[in-house]
Each structure stands twice: as C-alpha cells, then as structure tokens.
Amino acid sequence: MDAAIAAVEKARREGLRVSANMYLYAASGTGLSSLIPTWAHSGGNPELFKRLADPATHARIAREMHAQGPLPVSCSRASARSR
Image 1 (cartoon, rainbow, N blue to C red):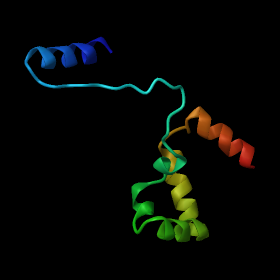
Image 2: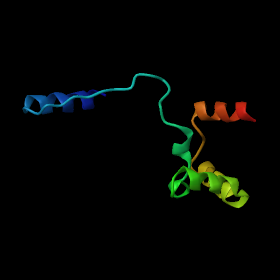
Image 3: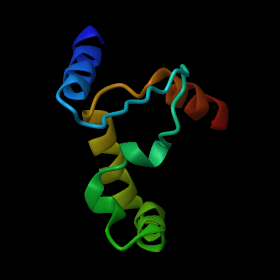
C-alpha cells in the first residue's frame, strides 16, 4: 500500500492530476460468473445458459473451475446453501 501511495504522490509532484480509490469492504462486487471460464461466456448469457444446460459442457466448465483452485469463502458458502 505504501508503494501505491508513494507512486500517486510522486505523480502529483510531477504535475499530473492523479487520483486513487480503494474498495474498503470485505466483500466485493465480483459475481460468481467471473469464475466461469472465458470461453463459456462466448456469445453472451444465452449461449452460456445453453452450455450450462448441456451435461457434458456443464461438467467441463465445473472441471475447469475446480482446476483454478478453491472458491473464495463467500462463493463456497453460497454454493453450500444452494444444495
């Protein structure tokens, strides 16, 4: 954090109009869809929903999501509640 603040202050000293912002909440606004592989989003939500409805493609998406590593705690809790 100190390095980020120093970079902003240095830029300001050099005459640049710089601002910075920080999201201070423990949870973010990133949705679960950000964990779905990029290729699965091709064609927008209607195509994604078709892929998720197909058992083989759904399984592939799930495998690739699991290969990315554990879900964030907030997503894991939401997944457990929906079962």
